Image (cartoon, rainbow, N blue to C red; front, side):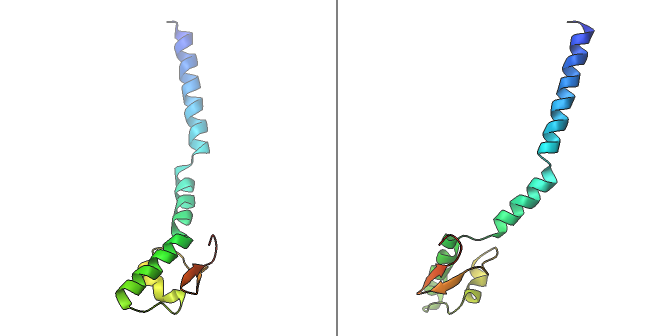
Length: 89
């Protein structure tokens, strides 16, 4: 193998690594993933309603009653007829 081939392969490798890092910025990806993870789904809220009902023998009166049963933001949801109502429901 010639020295020029080795130099060209090294240049291409470094370029690909630099572009990949710029496209996949770990800190930015982690921040976006955390925002998504902090958002609860309709199914999550319904599950919390069932858990609340099972432990308290009564339905929750408001979404704030479920705060201890769900990790994430559930403020966009409400309880209508015993089920979650909100985004994606």
